[in-house]
Length: 328
Image (cartoon, rainbow, N blue to C red):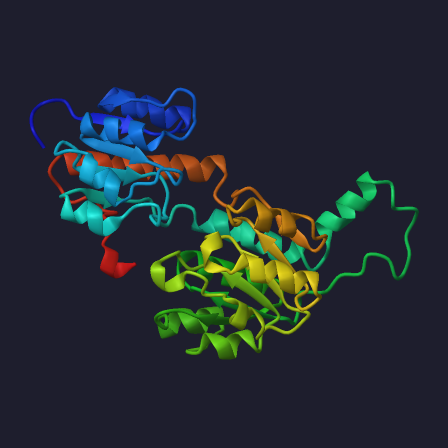
């Protein structure tokens, strides 16, 4: 970087402590209204910035990098997922991309486990029944759900979040099965008492609950396709705290409507209003507004990680969380 002050544009509101530190350290333009920037405003900001501190809602595609000009050198993403950034385009235009991995694994796993419990035990249905005045007293046969103890949990993607889910699942008496691009270290596998399946199809045919914890990449788009969802038995549940694109949610909705699946817990959902409304109407689907990492602790940790990446980059060092497409 040059000796001139580094100019940073932050695209959304961040925790006040993080914004204060950014303002103390850099020449920073903060977001005031906490609304996503338009593509035109993003490009204008990039032309006047050395660093864009981006978030999930920013579509930094090939057109963005082609139009950003020569000043932009770093996209410091506030978040672990980078599927909204065209990494190849960034690299071709000399722009480094960083993210904030690891810090949200535990909170995301907490939410996955909450959904793993909430859907089979019909927690949201119970709350709605109380609110609607439908509960007239205890009955031996009313609002029966399913136990999770003794069930088989199939985790898709046994990275940081997947392993944290596995540890929680074992405490609730679930047996852990997993499918990942690469088999994990045998010591970790033994610690988790996890069974590896090279074939995703074979794992899906044998588990009771599926937890999606892999990143969204071109290779994982609709990884849980209509064909694969049909491999699950009718009493199986699907939980997703990763990205909605990994599941064919139209097929998921249809199968739950027909009783071919027992339900789903979704922290992320298809942006299509038609698909979302179909899922939302189903009593055995718990839908959340992308809350898995929404804790104060995670957001502060993400901000600190982002600050470290920016400071290291500006000081002429390789930032610790540089995103390399081949490693995703």
